[in-house]
Amino acid sequence: MLDKINLALLDKDKDYLNSFVEYVASTKSQKLQVIAFTEYKYLLNYLSEGQKQVDVLLVSRDFYKDVSSNCSGVIILLDDGKAEVCTRYKNIINKYQYGDKLTAEIMSIFSKNTVANYNFDFDEKKTKIIGVYSPAGGTGTTTVAVGASIQLAWEGKDVFYLNLENMPSTPLYFTGEQNDNLSTILYFIKSKAKNLAIKLDGAKCVDPSYKIHYFLPPDSIYDFNEDVSKEIITLLRELKGTNQYDKIIVDMSCEINKNNLAVLQYCDEIILVLEQDKTSEIKLQCMLKELRLLSPKNNCEIIEKFHLVVNKYSADTMWDEGKLKISEKELLIKIPWVENLTTFKEGLCRLDMNSEFGKAIYQMLLNI
Image (cartoon, rainbow, N blue to C red; front, top):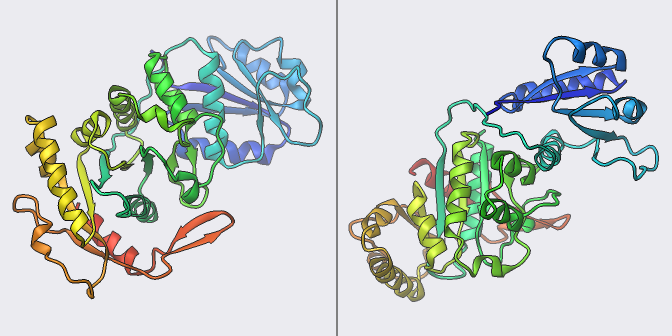
């Protein structure tokens, strides 16, 4: 088992090298050990010293021809976009992009070209997995899940948002580019691929505004129509095991099936989203009945994790609050209906987190 990937940069742009090295040292030091060179001869001197090796070499176009025959590691061209890219370049990444995206692409290319097995030593961080679930459709679970993710990110927490809905709307709230998606991740896990942690790191997107990590939606909704409960739990276990995140927010569909049941059992806490209407009352009772039938051993354990939340609350609506109860659990919070909660800007949906909705989300998270 190897504990770090040795990354080297060869580029004449000293300012760029300094910025990249500082970024990796401050954010990726658990996975990457980085060194930079402005001249090819300095790299050769480094490689000739004892047992030193380079796993990944990022190289500018100026030096590519020199190093392509003299480096045993994975060679990646740092493309500055100033000239047409020749087909002889096997691995290429854009030099000028956000650090998270740049390192994710490096990890993705490296994972496809290495046979070594890596075991990263992460700093200790107690990751909590919070599921957001509702037995009734249309209650706003995604709004609550996304709002919770944004609030946590605003508080300086490291957050992963995982959408497991059949019809996910992730690209509506977060932006990012990536070749891989959740379908690719499930395939990696099913095939028992080596270096799953590296593959996950290479497949994730990082929203540039909130710095929230996430995966792009699967290729097809049918990916979740089959039983992939073992793969989903492996994914959650791997994400949690990295100790990279303070919170993992899991946005779930409303079904009670093997996939959701496994996630409910694995979550540390569950936000149960309901509305002040008859549908929520009936669906809540149906859910409790299904849990008793499908998971008699774990039924009580799952119920203990529930935190009841009423979304889109209005003081003008008549309802019997006592009917939205599980055992002796009271409502955690009422999230008010907010006019014009969302605005669309440049194709993205933005939540007004300074509204009464945002204040309620903040209070909710304080009590979980």
